[in-house]
Length: 285
Image 1 (cartoon, rainbow, N blue to C red):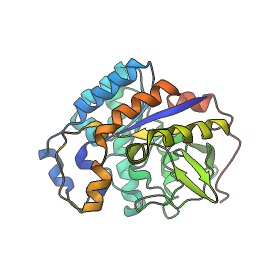
Image 2 (tube, rainbow, N blue to C red; image 1 turned 60 degrees about the horizontal axis):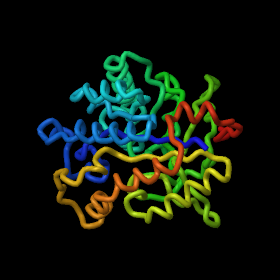
Image 3 (spheres, one colour; image 1 turned 90 degrees about the horizontal axis):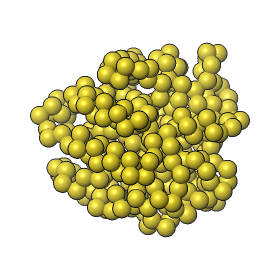
């Protein structure tokens, strides 16, 4: 079964966990490592002839347009990760609209194409920010991958379907929602999608979870960040828990990705959607 490989393109200083330690005004002066890390990912995917969806933070695109061009040159799909990596539920609707529009315009200008895919910073569409869908639709977004139906300190809490589904938007059509990969254990969802879970969990557990998802007839949506392959990134002095969650097992990420790319079939979100029969609609407004 075809699964989706997705990459959230942001630098080490954009991470939501450190947003109270690093101010936005500091970003331009910090060492950027995103270009070299994306180049490493592109070569990894090329080795296995896999195409992926790259959700690019438009701040990165604005400051490093070569990142977008490189992703295009390798034949991958480009979506937006917003502009300033601000959590949606910490924004007003007007602020989110402005951030999204800015990101779509910047990425569209650099790529020369229409931007129709979106992923919220830190999966921050929750029950209090479902209004984001009307703004996404207005901005030309047709595919979203922002739902992570698990419990987490930064995201989750939505009891949405685990498979792909359609979100109705005020009579103006629908947006296809592609939740991150989870497996059900009892009455709870267990995250298996990648990112910190890829780093923290044993590889056999990740692989078993993807097989279970595929055996249930669902595609697994996997994600990771370029900084998760970068052992040499600058260290942020934060609390012990935040440091552990961000840096632990970074040296294992690439090795685990090699294994997944060898054992499972991956492509872009658009390719996976094209091969998927989507029958569910959620929520019922």
